[in-house]
Image (tube, rainbow, N blue to C red; front, side):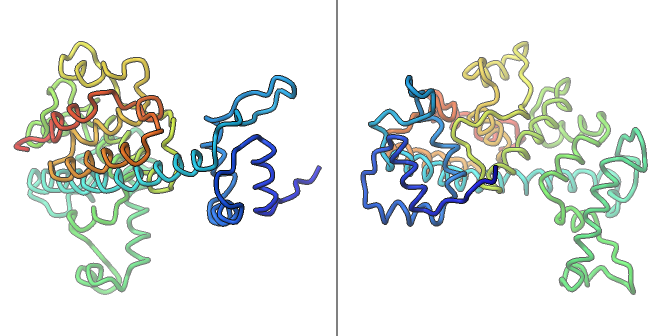
Length: 317
């Protein structure tokens, strides 16, 4: 049976049929639906549904309003924007730390072209080689960029590592940390991070992978509301500092707040962290009907936690 598309007027009627209270003009609802996909909004509506005892279908309880749905959607979007600012600092910092450390460690501007820093199971199929190939394609696409032209001789462009790394995505950054030999990551940790040396590889690489996932969610405008993150950072209760971080979410380490915590811990800019905290405070005031604890995993003392952990695992921060 073919699916028949609905107009915004049809979609509005569907909402009314599901017992949603329309607390504004129909035209305003239709305008909102014209610019925000109904299918996208369903991800938010689900948490307001109840099961109709007569039809067993999902409906609203008769008191949920269109404004409830709209406010939840808008709050989620604003939270993503605030997170993007925080994650941008993480990404740039992690790039810079890596290339600064290893370019000086090897005394070689082109260390990233060498295989010695990395561990490979299959050299030809390694993730690092895929990253290199991906970056080379990007360099080819931006061949007229001043930075590319500066390092191009004839038909060959050989970027120094500190320029090469700027063409990498956050996902690429996650891969290079994960693919770097464990002893080298421990050396990098000793110079730039405050992770216990016995945990530096597992935690640092896992945290970066988790931040990359969060970044992708925010960048692609995915829903954060009641998001359960599959890629999660590890938890180790034997280490007191990690216990203090994770015990607030011990039952569900996949919450958004757990990921915000690791972003804050790895953020070298305390002003950015303060700005993020202020933006969340504003959101909580403006959208006071939204329970940040159940929807995003924010504990009651979330503000104190983030303030105290700002730059916690960055040396000299």
